[in-house]
Length: 190
Image (cartoon, rainbow, N blue to C red; front, side, top):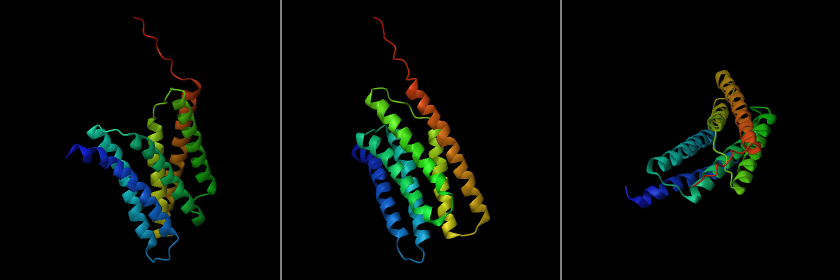
């Protein structure tokens, strides 16, 4: 595979996630009879693009300013838009969505502020697990729109939402701690 494709494919996958979110939002407001099945397929494609863009960028050791900025931004847009679209269906209490959005905005603010001070805060594994459970929450929510009144899916939605909240606030506390207690830079003596 040529180097140009290697350098651009992760960015294309990131951009495709943004386009898929727009299509999903449009479909939510359509009158198509099988719209939730189409939305679910597009959601799976968007989730796959999120997984692949980072995996390929690491494998090929390509990093771009576009990828650094927009991968995280499209992750947030993706989850926030999906929450907004799911709220009217009362699958979860609105407070769950608000708590998840509040945490993400707070942590992103802390990370950006620290970065502006030249003290980047490293990613947390619990933050990555938060994203996994947020994606599962959306997944089970969409499946409930396809298969309403399914008790197993409702239970899985509640479990994934609970796990998303736990990992959100646990990782959030770790980010706040790192913000309050930034790592000391060592002065090297010659």
